[in-house]
Figure 1: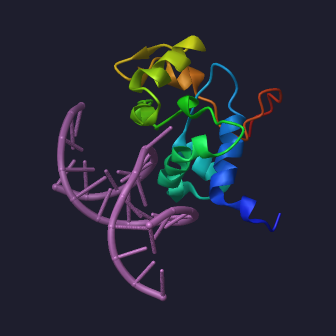
Figure 2: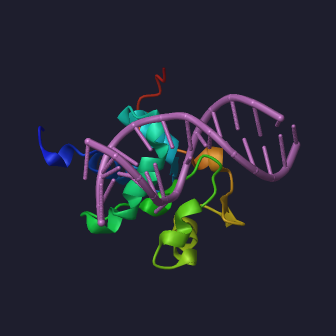
Amino acid sequence: MSRKSDSFFLKVYDVARKIPFGRVTTYGAIARYLGTARSARMVGWAMNQCGNVYPPVPAHRVVNRTGLLTGKHHFDSPNLMQQLLENEGIKIEDNRVIDFKKVLWEPGKKQGKRKRR
DNA sequence: ATTGTGACGTTGC
DNA sequence: TGCAACGCCACAA
């Protein structure tokens, strides 16, 4: 710690990489998990540099709170994000994630530990 | 140091 | 109920 790598961006990448397969999360969820709930915008912004870091970040699994693929336009190809999501079993319609709440995954939520709360 | 921005979120009307 | 505007915080130039 005490390193530049502690940047908010690095934390975002770290959390984003923890997104399980076939699941998606929201910028706000990541921001809140990092302690900067009001920096949801920064989360998305960090994704802008996701290609600048390694390992690559599954930014395609990150959508806004409405389930809209807001950042799809920032990918190599606008339809690339949707393709990747569909490839994971997530259905997309009109740039929106179907059953968004069902595939929504929040950081800190233990999948194994059913003892939520 | 200051300014601007940005893949959101929330509140207001 | 839908749309608009604001706020907000962290990073880049």
